[in-house]
Amino acid sequence: MYIKKQLILSLLMAMTVSALCDTLFPSTPKIFVERTLAAKPLPKFTRKRIEYARRQREENMKRPLCNIVDGKKLTPKSGNPHDYISTGPYWWPNPDTPNGLPFIRKDGQVNPSYHDGDNVRMTLMTKTVQQLAVLWYFDKDEEAAARAVAQLKGFFLDEATRMNPHFNYGQAIPGICDGRCYGLIEAYTGLGDVLDAIVMLKDAPTMTAETYAALVAWFRQFHTWLNTSSIGKKEFEAPNNHGLACYVQAVKYAIFIGDMEAAKAYMPRVEKLICKSVDPDGSLPRELVRTKSFSYSTFATGMMTQLVLLGKMLDYDLLDSKRESADAIRRAVLFLCGFIDHPEAWKHQQIGGPINPNALSNILARMSAATGDPIYLDNLKKLTKPSFDVMNDLFVAPEF
Image (cartoon, rainbow, N blue to C red):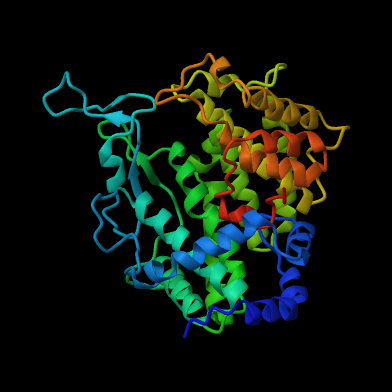
C-alpha cells in the first residue's frame, strides 16, 4: 500500500542518503546529487517535481503498459514492427501532385500525422518511468517501482514487444526517404532521458541484476549502432542543435554502459562543435534562421549546458577559462538573457510567439550549479515563472 507520511519519508531519506549518493547518474555529477539530498528541506523545485510524481501516481499505475509493437500505426520499410518508425514533423502532402508525394517541408508547422509515430509512445514510456522511479527513489514505493520495471521490460526486453536497438526509420519522409539522421533527435528525449530513471530503480526489489544487465546490454547495442551506422555518423556531424543533442545522448549512453573512456573521447569533438555553433555576439546563426528561432536557440543552448554537466563527470571542463568553449557557452547563455526584460526586442521569426524567456530556467540553473557565478542566478530570478520541468535536472534546481 502507498503510505504517504512525511515523518516516515524523512526517516527513509536520512537512512538512505549515503547509499543514494554512490549512484552514478548519467546526467548529473555526483556532487550535485549529494548537495541536493543533503539540503534540509530539499530545494523547492526538486520538491515540486517529487510532488508532481506523487500526483501522477494513480494515472501512471493504471495506464496500460506501452510499447512500439501493439497498436502500431506506421510500418517501417523493414516491415518489422519492432523497428522504431516516425515521420518528419514538418513535412506535409504535396498539393501539386495527385498522391501528395513527395512530401514538402513547412518549417515549424507540425503535421498531425507526426503523432501516429512511435515517438509518442516512447515519450510516454519515458515520462511514466521517470515519475514512477522518483516515487521509488524518494518514497520507497515498491508498487511504483514494480510498475516502472514492468514498463521498461515491455519496451526494451520482452521478445513480443521489445524495440530493436536502432533508429534506422526515424523521421521518414513519404516519397523521399525511409528514415534519416534527424530522427535521432527523438532518441534524445525518448531514450537518453530514461537512463537516470533506470539508475534510480537499480536497488528496487523487482529490478533484478539480470534485468538491469539486460537493459545495459540494450543500450550498449544502441550506442554501438549510433557510432557505426551511416545515420548516426551523419547526425554527429550536424552543425546545429541536432549535433549537440546527438552528443548529449551519446555521452549519456557511454556513461550508463560504463564506458567512461568512450564518453570522455566525445568531449574534444563536443568542444569544437560548440565553438562553431556560436557567433561572436553569442547568437546561434543556424537556429536564428528557423521559424521558431528563439525555441531552437534555447534548445541548442540547453544542449550545451547539459554537456557542461556531463563534461564535469568526465574531468573535462568545457567552462575552463583555457578552453575556447568556455567563452562560447557563456556568450550563448548571456545573449539569450538579454531578452528576459525585453522579449519584444527579439527580432527573429518565432511563429506562435511571443518568445518565452522562462524557457531559460534549466539553462540558468545548470550554469549556476556548474559555475557558482551569481550572474546566472540573478537572471534566473528575473524570470516571471521559472519552471524546472526536466526530470533529469532533479538535482540541479537552485533554491531561491
